[in-house]
Amino acid sequence: MEPEPDVWAHPRLRAAVAAEDWAALLKSWRVLTRASQSRLGARVGLSQPDVSAIENRRRRVTSAEVRQRIVRGLGVPAELLGGARTELPLPSLVLPEVVADPAMDRVRQAGDGRMRLDVASLEAMERLLASHRRAEDTLGSRVVAGVVAAQFERVAGLYDQARGPLADRLVKVMAEYAQFLAWMAQDQDDTPVALAWFDRSYDWALEAGHGDMAATTMSMKAHLAWSKGRGRGCVRLAEAAAATPGASRATRAMALQMAGRGRALEGDAEGAYRNLDEAHRVILDARDAPPWLYFYGESWFSAQRGMADVHLKAWSSAVDHLVAGLAGFAPAFRRDRAWYGACLAHAYAGAGEAEAALEAALAVVGDAAEVGRPHAWGELHAVAALLLRRGAQEGRVLVDVLAGLD
Figure (spheres, rainbow, N blue to C red):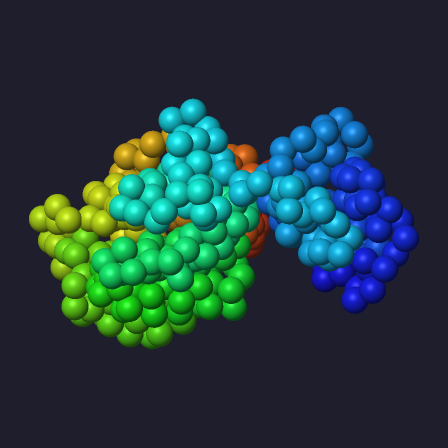
């Protein structure tokens, strides 16, 4: 629920901001907006248990990054923050072997004018973005999006001082940031924001002569159309992506399988499998995957083919492809394991294997609740509904489990 227009005029809320009393701030904002802890958590990138722990003062907010996510997520007016806003540092996720401080420090120094923009600074930005892509696989988009958005502002602020080849490379980096931000908005089902970032990414990719990113952005717009049930739009966008000059073979394979999924959504089995077979031939020979497709290969292709089988109600084939795909996913890919695991549960339920469907659902329900909302979470609800319609007692079990985490 959106806050009332004058919510920040309330003295209780203003006092909480002034005192930096984060527990009172969260609880007061929820009371005034009649929002649940889950809804508030979705806005600020915290799980419901984390919100509860902060409100009940079992957890203190000591991280500048968490403070900034609360400020941004709740829309705290700048005039209430006073000097506190400028004291919040550019956030980063510093995790062992995931994101290191040196790259972040270099971006800060270039943005602050303490270091000239040079090739080394641009390489640091690229490493930082690559690290956060991998962090998002594990932590989910709700946690990572605010961090990356703040970093993007710093990176984009360097545009005026870039000249010649440095300018082209900086615009390329900006296109990659915009594509990642679009993906995370899409992952949170925020379609208008996702489309806006996709358009920025596409424009900057063209400006930088970066055909591979332009094709990737078009392909991901196809994915967005697919996620909204628009099969024909998905096919057209995916075919445009596959035909984009400068697209790598790996990016073209991703676009072709997306076209196949769009045709499957439309019920065109022959066209779907034709696209998927062509995509498979391309991906087998691809050795040129761009850094943002680090995950793409046989396992992901198999899992995505399984999704097309689900659309076509080819349940046995869907189970086989999804099981094979999931077997190749590293444990760090929590969000994707949650999504494809939920699809596997759907395939088992469609095949009439209620016990196997429940087992597959329970294997991923924790990750679906923490990093897989709303898509994997919604798919598990669809599985429960399908089981209930078929009179399977496993459906009631799954409903109760989901209710306990809602």
